[in-house]
Length: 170
Image (cartoon, rainbow, N blue to C red; front, side, top):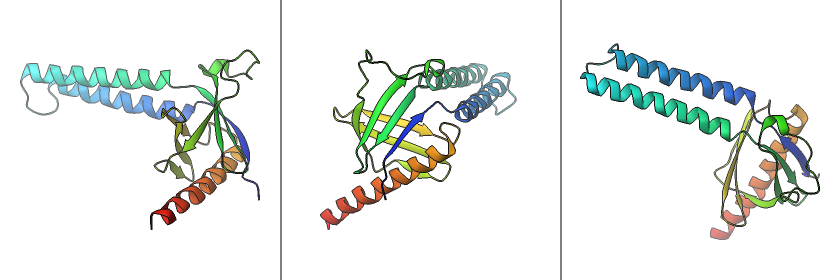
């Protein structure tokens, strides 16, 4: 059985919706604190907490919006992973051209603290320069067949790479 897979990972609309809902909840809590509906704090403390909630919610949402890139993951039959940035914005998620400096992508390693759940994958990847890349993959980020193929390939890599490492340590 070959674990080879090539998958284009688009930004998840579900994840953006969940983050937006979370940020709105934090804003609502901040507003409740600021007007004195929660707790018994002095006016300056209520305003400070409310402002902090507003800033944190806005910052979290902006960070989420800025990280919505489209990637291609190519996994070879031997478990080697190549990560290629396709587009910085979801609207520009087109095939890369020959003039793209990132055309060949970069070789990355799947880290042991990646999350591989049935309906969610958080791939923590490390490139050869030591930089970390985190890819959140929900079922709406890829097709159903691609999600299944990527899940199988990542589980195979994790099982073979990390079981060999633990055997070496014992």
